[in-house]
Amino acid sequence: MSDIDSQLPVRSVQDVDERVLVKHQDGDDPGGVGKTQEISEKKAHVRNFSKDSDGTDQEVLLSQEGHTQSNGDYDAVNNKRPSSQGLIVSDRDAAPSETTMNLRPTAVVGEDDTVSQDVAMRHSNGDHIDEENPLPTYQAESPGDEIDNYKVDPAIAKGAFSNHDYTVTVAKDLKSIGVECSASGYAKFELQIETGVATGIFNAVATNFNSTAKPDCDLNYKLKVAAGIIVRVVKTNLDNQTQDLYTQIQGIEI
Image (cartoon, rainbow, N blue to C red; front, side, top):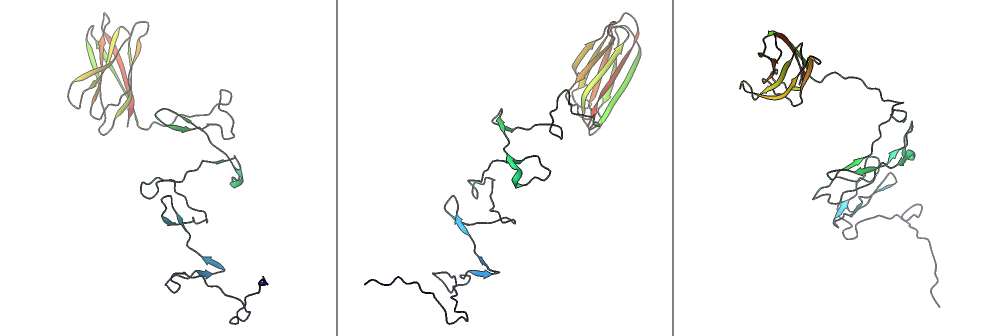
């Protein structure tokens, strides 16, 4: 005759309600310090450990909101296999929340092994920016000091020349140099940049000629010129008589 498969309750005579109280302790060292599981506020306080990608025991940590922490920064010693996840963005909503996180952004592979995320510039209401619905813009103040240096050289003889010099201010660079030139007769205008502070040696970087049909011309130089260096415009009268020569050096000092 087989044993009876009986299920009897376990009771304790030590407890007034005959309850069985279970104490969780370390099986190998039950009496050791800190070897008993802490129970308080109806919660079992457990330090959760698990294996990392190298098979080493690591304590699992949580954020202040109770979420499992993840680390996406590569570290050759501590995080050789960083966490990775796709970016999810919210629908446009007055009160975005987890329920509106429905959209995946896109990207495209560019030059030099770059990956560029697609970005759409639109009006605040989401409408396209086009000729019928343009984006308003305005002219911002210059980031530096605007230079406007005007000089007239009167009665320059036929075949003679005169110089219009501007020395870049101390501790600043002159950028976006433009020169407006004018003469009633034929003239040549040459923009020169000094090779260094006080060298007195100049290199020509731009030349222009006017005509009686077009008495005005421009000179331009895009590279910056350092402090203390002279920017020079050489004005030569190519007409058959004496005339006045006009130049106006402009730029931004930063």
